[in-house]
Length: 195
Image 1 (cartoon, rainbow, N blue to C red):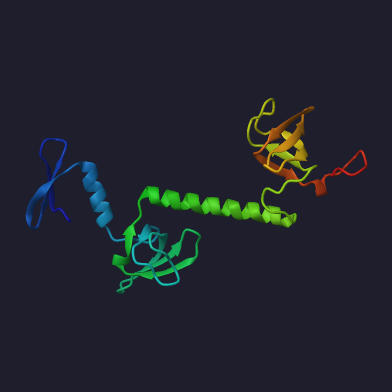
Image 2 (tube, helix red, strand yellow; image 1 turned 45 degrees about the vertical axis):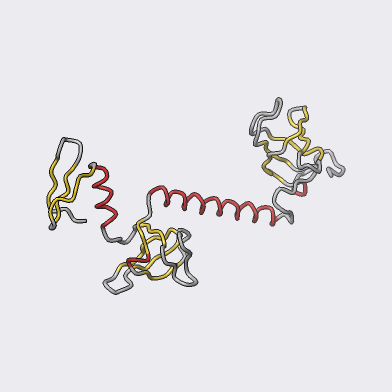
């Protein structure tokens, strides 16, 4: 809809007038949103895929417009991860909302963090969360007298994945931990085997 004239009816709504005459009223914020959504996509805009390009994207995926030309398939795109996601016709995409873009970015960041975590554990030859006696860890939850961020050493591992942590001369069972240093890298100044 391209209103050629707008006028206030009662101070709170806008009357829409097109080439075909008066077509009703809208709140000012609704009018701004409708006009924005009707604008063609441009480089840098985010869109949601309605009709995927085979092998490059999935329905509902959020993509970024990287190039626009005047062909029948005008939009070149990339995914949130920067990978090429194909060319699209105008009807294959809809403008993504701010919320959809924020959620796509959140998921991408979550995936990146998980990949980094898996790589960190893989580098020491363990599965994610595979702690051992003697590992230096940081607590991620408060338990008893151990506040979040307490640095300690795993004294005992339990099959239910709770770990007995020695810290500040006390021991508590913790389940939420971050590995600071694996036992293999800890220097034992007292001699003898930590494990």
